[in-house]
Image (cartoon, rainbow, N blue to C red; front, side):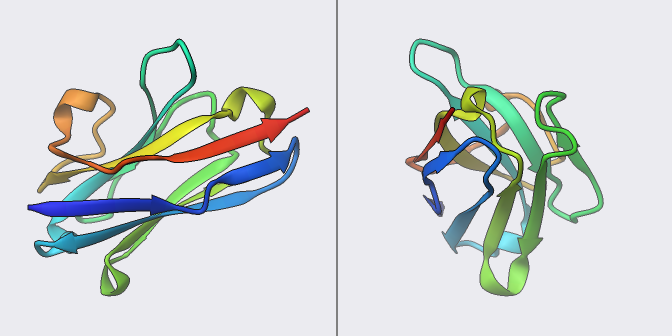
Amino acid sequence: QVQLVESGGGLVQAGASLRLSCAASGRTFSYYAVGWFRQAPGKEREFVTAISWSASTTDSADSVKGRFTISRDNAKNTVYLQMNRLKPEDTAVYYCAAAYLGTAATTTRSYTYWGQGTQVTVSS
């Protein structure tokens, strides 16, 4: 079992930056791929970005490329999502998810473990 806890969300103005953290406990986190997804009210959960278990591969949605960066610190059992130049359309609950020996997968069904989410609100 892997337990995931997101943090770092908040209310910011458009153009600001936030860094989300996904802290893991349980199994050896370095063997897990991690993805970030988000869900806005009334919308389906959508892929944001992901990093493979080896950190050799990342992938991002077109809507966040050039603004969001995913990274991992296995010594701290933590994956980060650096979000720059935030837009009102980035407002959502952000979830991290993990998959054992996974790739930088873009679908929710590729991940086994999920956190509870952290709210990000971007005002215009």
